[in-house]
Length: 395
Ligand SMILES: [Zn+2]
Picture 1 (cartoon, rainbow, N blue to C red):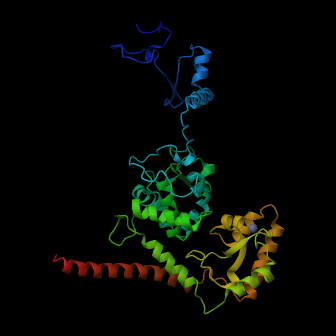
Picture 2: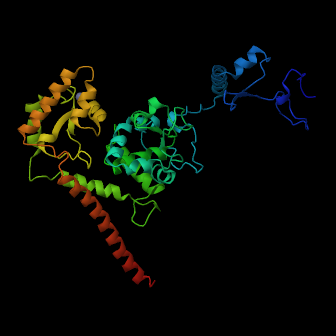
Picture 3: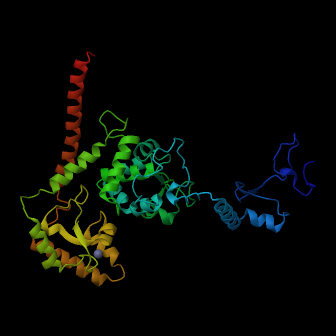
């Protein structure tokens, strides 16, 4: 017998007799079962001395770590840098993480919060393209597009939350739409793929710089897989959606034949908005925002009447929503203020002869056709180049 008397333990957890192992636990861990009979966690038998239990507690562990650090400092050891939140947990992927050290500041950290921030826009995209609901429930699609081992969405069938998903509150608008959203966002590869996914869907990533977007694109190009190549999925290929969205932006930025220079924009800022942010009204450094976003969903245009000055904070929070959607949320507690600001922006648009396209029945199908045609063009030219190469290689 290698420890004290164990007769007090119930028969179900009596240790099985066997050869004594060096360093083996003197006491077996006791399984705790929840009301469904599932194993939840293990505890030490509670007859241990209180100090021993305290040592096992989280605070105790931190105290031990600090003591160890002090001892290390006394020896002149270099302290280990604290782990950042986004670097913890190796995550569910079994592959080795190739980009654990970012060359630039991780502007999308923590990734879970970053994902949650974009759920309203992703939902809007899914509602406009219902096949995306099915895609996001497809594991293969999610692995390809997000490097995510779990399906991004799971249909809500009951009230109990499946594992690896966020609770209803964190699943946000998807919860109301009848879905759970996976919580398994952990690695920098997820971050890079998520950003590239947003862009491929015409959604502007919130609060990240052009440099960070470029990092995401490069990372996906280097380590990722995208499914959009005409021939099917291919490691390291660039998504066709990126080109399609660029085409949509090009079209919407050149309708109709309006021209204006920087001076015109400066005049709009000073005269129409008095040098303030069009949304919060504060006098801050502003950048150009499109009141109606330029993408295939909202069909905003790059015209003076759709350009408004926005401070960094409002610009980031508004993201890919329209000015009415954003202002109604922003001034949820003060609807009168929301109406007034929306009215000001309507006046600004009318003054510059800008009428949003919205649900123009003639335009939307043309935009979709342009995207489809671009896919055809891409496929055609791939075939032609492949033909040339086949001849050259004598295949
Ligand atoms: Zn603002």
